[in-house]
Length: 222
Image 1 (cartoon, rainbow, N blue to C red):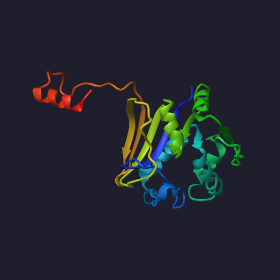
Image 2 (image 1 turned 90 degrees about the vertical axis):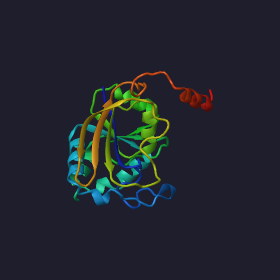
Image 3 (image 1 turned 45 degrees about the vertical axis):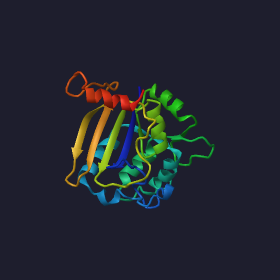
Image 4 (image 1 turned 180 degrees about the vertical axis):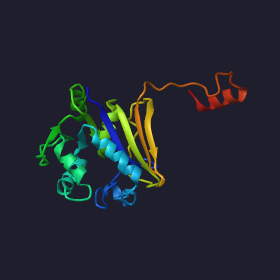
């Protein structure tokens, strides 16, 4: 069995759009492309990213993110992030795409039906399938209940609007924190794994509702 790991760089208000470059994704008038750059030298960020990509993995990408990566990482192998660039070129890249445009980056494989194909891949033996960016794909995976682990890198800023890691289509699930690290600069890295169904109850224990509470409920309607 292969795990699906959703990995997201997010603001405090959950925005994950265009973290790396100013012109990465101006969709919807987004003006803050490259918002992670001021935090790039954060030692905890570097350590946690290093741990993630030191484990065996294949990339799982939406077509839009694939095009961004394919235009950047193959040409960055001699730069400061050369190790990651070489790793990304080496590993297999599964790309959710509905059209027949050629995938030019080596070791790229098209997925024509993303959720069905990812469900099939999960049944095979192999390394974890790790997402980067790919908001629409991540939403589809969460809606189809295919995500085993979520790793977030939460940065101390608000962006107001933009594409977000979660939306209303996610299947309700409980996740358990298995690892966390906080940097002096305010970055919070966290790893969550699935931990069953959502349970509910009365905070403080069950008690008989007051007359005021019963009246409040009646106002809410059926």
